[in-house]
Length: 335
Ligand code: KG4
Ligand code: ZN
Image (cartoon, rainbow, N blue to C red):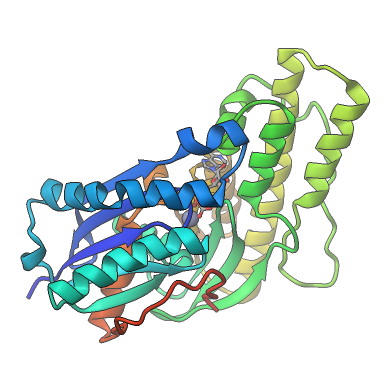
């Protein structure tokens, strides 16, 4: 029997819904971005995010169903992001999912947003086999998970301060480039020299597999204060040098962790995994050690509901069910 599952994602500033067949084939995937709402503030404003989710959640779910050519009565289950994320934002998706599950008497499952990011890798032509290591790099998280078997995760390392995406967003703000910072830094960096300025990487020498990005961000801030106003070419050099430092930290630590854990497959996912130089550098460095890197296409790396539906389908297939008392958990841990 085939399973038709509707998934809903509203953990941060994207309202998204998708319909998948058997957790693999994407019939529809609708993402309503809120960048226009938050851009004037240079970051996500939680209260405004919840309000926009409330305004668009019904049309977004309707569009996902109509794009898929599916009616609510055809579904076999509903998956929704339960956490981690902004509580007000999560609640909108959870309320919608619970209402639909109750009215249509459908099985409901809560999904961890980070597991969703990992499941984006299963929606490609090159899905990873277990065991693998997953580097989840987003606006809120930077973490390495060892997935020894389906639905099991062990935290191998994480950021001690800022998430990688947060560092991109903050440096873009310092450079006056706009929001969200990641894609703008990447575009600006194309015109700059990544070797122009050496922004020092934090040394973590206690043998852990952790990351740290606040040092790089602070050195960019100090450099900008020292130099005063920059020309366009100098801004491009700062963007390129900053990006190179972040990429180096992510790649070095991930390859080292993969060798330490002894896996031959690495998944790179989350919004920052849309970054071209990071994708190329990790694939090259891992390749030197015979490690294969699975990277979803950029539209599946940034927040979307197809990935949430894929993870939810795996949990529904494993017999998991959430009660209608399912609640948002802003700090939900994956491992
Ligand atoms: O996964 P995501 O869409 O949302 C969260 O779960 O946080 O990640 C958003 C983050 C933002 O910080 C954004 O600046 C970053 O991903 N990002 C990028 C790129 N595209 C998005 N960072 C670097 N390069 C990119 N091309
Ligand atoms: Zn995300």
